[in-house]
Image (cartoon, chains in turn purple, orange):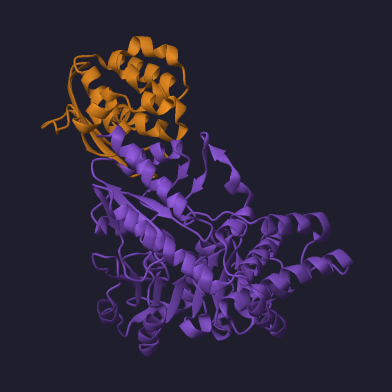
Length: 421
Length: 148
């Protein structure tokens, strides 16, 4: 950790300001044409594109270092294990976690949430207890809790949002009662872009003795996350949304929480010793990493976070704020367009509906203009119901997007309006 | 004509905007629900049978222009047809939009305007959803049809 910290301090002094054109050159996929038009990729909320550094790191691991981790005594196995554990330290640093042992590698945010629901939830939630979520959760932060509630005879409570998509904090606080065991909320809404005041929620929950699980899948690519400052018990994110590979994700858990939890899956690497009478479980985080992990994915994620860490964060965030502001202005001028999700604190996600045109038709026409957006319910059906729409068009931006791409989106929407006039 | 203009022909846009047979049939002899969970298209198809003839057919629901136009055109085409005729149309329609066999357009009358859909693989389900729903209504399946 201290090495990483020293590296971060020295890097902060030599970082050039964020230059979007230079950053774009690092993403090979972005330079292609689609249907004869330059690709305008506005679906980073679904998955982010990968810089060459990440692609090279995965490829280098397989070409030079591949062996099973934590098992062999030979040089390759040592290198593979070291690379895997370096990635873990990198993740801990990225999240501001105190210790790499608080980082469990999983397949993605969904698996991490299921792990917490199954290992922590089953032990700590009983009949008549309550689990509190918010109205803006992704299905992956609803369904595992529903399954747990059903199994245990517990109740799922929902904290509402206002018409802008802002979490109603006083309503949330009213729903944290003596039986509330878990508060599960998203840091950033995937469908609306709303940034939630996680630290405040953690304070409210901890006052009543409830643990807090934060879905950071949409926050990690945009915000400087610090789990120590947030104070949450668990924080999860997916590698592929933060410019890393698919199939790798992270569960952060406070060491005391992880240590008190039973294992989740049984198998190799999660044990100290096995006899047919009794198995001794390994220490954290290995207790939760049964089987051969996605080591190459972890290495790729480490490379992505290293790459992200080298960017000048304040000018990068200023760039994303500019995209949010510019996009909001431009889209607001389009006749018949209604933006869903207008929270004062949000990231550059534009969910909208266009009068008289179904989002799916918008998506098809935009695709022919080279513009990739998502049309649908964004795995947040209860939220869509809250706003009275079956689906929206969602343009979710990342640090590599530009004002010119927002212009292309707006031009594409004009084309939609021409066809559907 | 670009493939986009081929997809969104005036007839389709018209049926999408002003769907025909967009109502519930009171006392329907059969009905079924169809859902495309990916995009949220959600329709209900109602049938009134007179022996093996389709005396009336209608639909309700919400979805994209393609799915709505397909439902509107389908219900218009089926009124007065026998169940066997309906199955034959479904077979031809399926061949045209799913398998991309444009030669089927000949025997499909107005339904042929949907032939452009086969160039848009992600939209094929939109066009075929109500047909699967109709099929389910004809065969009395009790679970909603899903195109996933």
